Image (cartoon, rainbow, N blue to C red):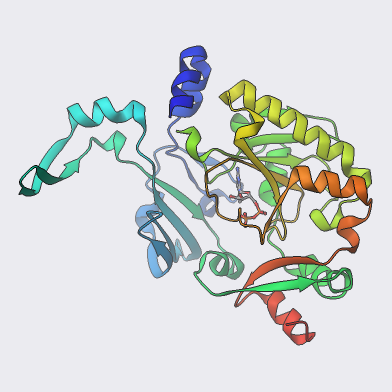
Length: 328
Ligand code: M7G
């Protein structure tokens, strides 16, 4: 929070950026093009089928249901309390006493609606794969040799992976163009840097940006060779500079990594604030970009030849393929 305040004093644009209200709910179910509209009551027609997972600690819930007869997933998440909202919370809320004991008392505080928002994410129409992705289930660590990748993983992801239409919409400026923070338009080395949709941009504590490459033919870490070093170094350097400029966050405060496996097979790099335990930042899935660069410098084919380890959920079709091949 101190970071945000310091930046705000210096840069009014940062205030605008961070206080941007994320009241937008994607209306793909209606228009199918990833357009969005503000202040929609689209969710009033949502009918819950099942709660996929929830967490009292994370204060979120993942719900599977129907919206206009289509399968949908809704994620609801309480957002952090911001320092700059404190004055309003103290002056404009009502308090209901729950209990008092000696010097201790607890209350139910009703904050004004604008300080009481819930971040909502809608996936609609959602595929079975989306429903599985958000369902709490057991995971298994898979050991993928270079041969396994060619014979099991690659054929599977070529047929079964999530659509990357949302990525192309970003690269083609058909969606989220106003959210782009930095772009290097070079077709080989360039990328787009923008907030991940998990980040509401209201505080830096959970900063989460993604850099998406303009190159469309690199699916994941597995495809990287030393030929891609200029691309990776360009992303590392320029995105860090953009983040320092925009948010006053130095590289020493960032965790910069790729997922293996990713959910979306179009190369992208995750930038999160160090200390924020972003989903998927554990050692079984996150590969630091700095390490990736060094590994490729030491061995041009490091990621083509190494055994890679990653977790798969119990009902992931790829896990079944590994089992069928006797690899688990
Ligand atoms: P990943 O490693 O492929 O998969 O990362 P993960 O979701 O299992 O981590 C893709 C990243 O893109 C994730 O951090 C998502 O939150 C983010 N993301 C996914 N979608 C569909 C969107 C989107 O439409 N817009 C933006 N800005 N980010 C997205």
